[in-house]
Structures are given as C-alpha cells and as structure tokens.
Length: 146
Image 1 (cartoon, rainbow, N blue to C red):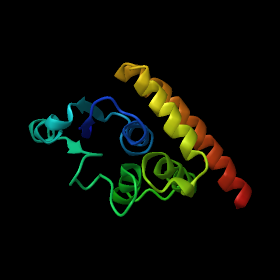
Image 2 (image 1 turned 180 degrees about the vertical axis):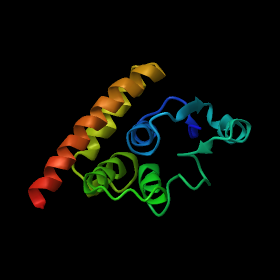
Image 3 (image 1 turned 90 degrees about the vertical axis):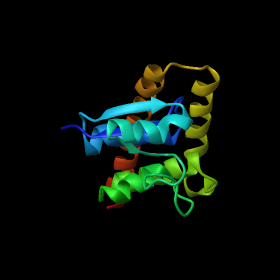
C-alpha cells in the first residue's frame, strides 16, 4: 500500500522539495495531500497520512533545519548528492541562508510561483524539474569531489 503524506496548500520551497524527495527516493506511488494549514492534522488522522512541514510534527523544521532534512534523517537517506541538496533547501527555506549560495535563487523562484498564484499541479511540475536540475548539479559536484 502506498504511503500517504499531507502538508499545507500553496507549496513553496520545502513543500515542493519534500514531495520531490518522496516520489523520487521514498515511495513513487505515495499519495500527496495539500490542504489548508488548519486541516493538516485532521486530514492526517482521517487519511492515515504522515503530516510534514507543519509545527510540532516529526517531519518538520528542527534545530534550524528544513523538513527536507527531517525526511532524509527519518528515511536514512545517505546519497551524498541528496545531502548536498539538503543544504540548498535549508538555505532557501530557513534562516540559515549562508549554507548554500543557490538557496537564494531557489527562494526567489518559489516566491515567484507563489506571487503568480500557480496551481498546485504547475508548482509541482515546474518545482520537480527545478529539483531534478539541482540534484544533477549536486551529483556532479559530489563526483568531482570524490
């Protein structure tokens, strides 16, 4: 049975990075729910879904990190390129902006799709492609280091 995950609607940085990570590395068949912030926990309980990127949940921001990092930790993902990518997501989605120079660009792209009020489908489609590109860059970076 496919895993289910739920978060807040109108995703920007972390709430697009996490679904990308889920679909690519955790469960390609996972069901993703995006609901108003006030409905995340109730939806999680009703659907048997794992809530993320909301306060007081396991897959949220902890110790200055992003929800993306919480997923990496929980699911024991050790791919060095993912660990590099986590720095970019952290820089884009938290106050730790200096951890990766790419973070500000990712932050502004996500702010743009938010200001343009893109549909969920478009945010995920374009966002997944942005994260595919970043992952390729991180893979190249790791390969050159190692």
